[in-house]
Length: 415
Image: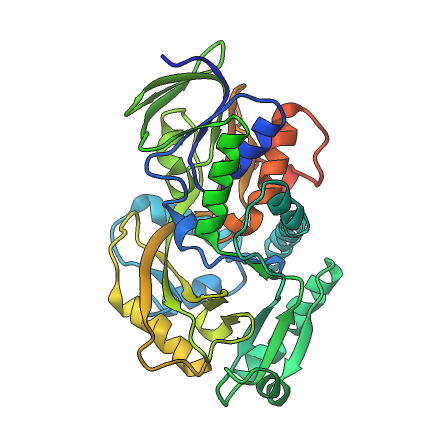
């Protein structure tokens, strides 16, 4: 048994490391237990966008109808793999109940609050910890080729403005004049100048280094086999031995439900499979990162690279590459952008994002437990929400007033 820690964190991705860094700087003795290497999961293949613009949740009116229409389309942006999976179908039933305007507005407000808090904190967070990861506040363009969908965005735009987001709705001709990378046929662009981007793998590596430098312990290749709460705290059995702590923070992303079952916790999270491909930056790269709206494809532009990413596929814990979906992402990019016919691909990735049933993260004390905390269920926004999540977990564990309302994210909402 190792010496007792104040906080054991299960999961060494962007969220787990950010929470560990905030806690160790608050004076806690922290140990992060990571089954692979730091950031080897969704944090590696993330598109690296910091997006308050992405406040609207996946659980939206019409989402289930679209998914059913796409059920047998292997290249659809949102796909539910047909198979016998009672847990998934139960989750989808609960998800469907939230696809209404009331719950959509509630989730949008909560997501906007945490995303804006994180975006505001990012520059100082990176500077304070000496993390150089190509962070740039260049904004993000949402590109539309369907005029009806561009016009229909007006209702969401009104709400986002009410929540404090700045956006600019640009017609097609102006968008083409301003961005030579776009192909003809653009109906309009919604520009969010407050959004930003970074290189996620470099960001996570920088946090791991800062965490260790601040006195934290990062245990890699350390798979958690079981965990239990005791009268004095928690005990965790791993592939590298046993660890004891006063508190345990569950930040294992899509693998959180498996760890939680051993603690008699139900975590309403399903793995949402996504893809990304990274290329050497072409001469024709767009000036800023983009979302190709109708195809739900992200385009992230870095100093020396370009990444395409997207799709949401509910297929359990299958991490095999589906080349139909990869080809669909590349084809979508070619429909919107002037890109080389055969760009030089540096990396092809698929991974699992932790999607909560209401598309809000679970942040706070686990219901019915004195020493268990949760920071999971961030969906596609783990990088975007990482700093605000870390600050909120630090405040809750340390008993200090949080910077924004934690109630919408409390795990007890599912108790």
